[in-house]
Image (cartoon, rainbow, N blue to C red; front, top):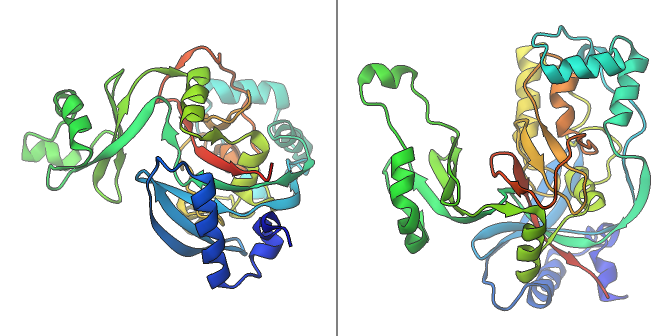
Length: 350
């Protein structure tokens, strides 16, 4: 059997753990640059909506990656409209009629099942079949133009990470970072989700860990990002690869299944947990519609819009096959507040 054959999911899942350890060791040796440090390699099992994958996650230069097995004849895209979606998801009461919603309703009406089906099909990529290679994929997306340097602990007020890099932006970070000055302020005050100074730093609040994850920042265009990644022996996922690593080729609109109604507290909590949960490959995606993820094409994933109260419309950017209508200039310098990307190493036999 060809070595690359065992990287197909159909064979990979039948291998003993000991064999998988040997395979991943060889892959890390031959496909990761010897100038990069690989650490914290650990065997993991991820599962979502009945799909399970035994794989490995590890760090490359301090950033988490996951091994994703390939899959021949993977079906991608969507043409089934709202098939499998409960009526309550698209028949909710509109609570916030934004400019985007007005435009959508003007074009599609969104009154009947057929209206919604047409809108969903035109908001997703076309149905197609592709052979997917095995990949190393960054577990978290990161803002464009940024380099991760560490985290600032909100409890201790201490920075952990690359100290020299933090010292170069510490003054600006401390000026942007604030805390309540009185007891009364502390009752209603909340830490901002992001702190940003152009060409200096970008910081994102991790509420679970009570830290700011801190990056240095330099304005960057799509073309410049590609050049930077190539120089580091990384790539951007193309649209086919992106859709595969999100939904594993499952024939459901959302990676977690068809539960999208949020008309009860239990349903809302379940959907929120599924969005925030690692997917079947161990990757994490933004739970907020607060920007776009770049692919190696003009097609963007995710969206930036306000909640409307219509469950299906609010959750649609989370769909595995969603394709944003937003366009951008590849030579334009892109803001880290709007655009993120995900590093990948594609394992090719040629």
